[in-house]
Length: 58
Image (cartoon, rainbow, N blue to C red):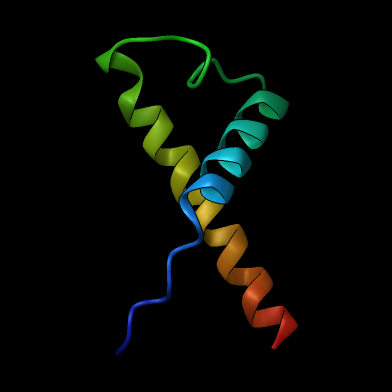
């Protein structure tokens, strides 16, 4: 099984930050290692969104 290609880092970061902000998350507004887990969750959501769009576009 081939891994899905990852979105460009800038797009990935932008989507993750936008989704987190819309949801009211402080994950990208706060500094510190205690926020790394939440940032990784939002980055995974951004990856999923981009991959879903790629599959939808065909």
